[in-house]
Length: 78
Image (cartoon, rainbow, N blue to C red; front, side, top):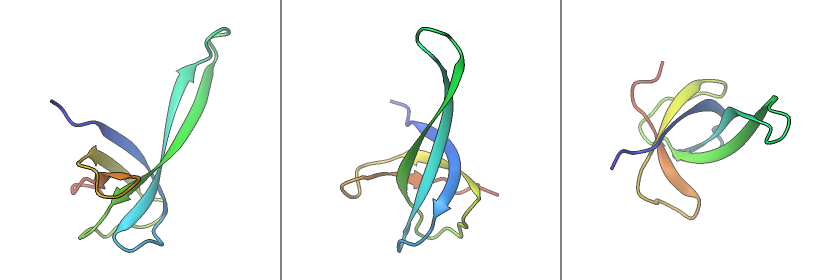
């Protein structure tokens, strides 16, 4: 089974070993079909990574590490 991957912007690095990433997507309105921007925040594991706020990162789904942390930051980010 393939792991889910998401791309987003780091908005907070205040936790030890974790970051908050905001992922935005565009989806059509169910009735009017106009594109609407939706966003969601994910907590991701960032141990061993040098991640800064405002940086674009890729998240990969992993096992559940905490109550709301089930993604990790992929290693080949710029």
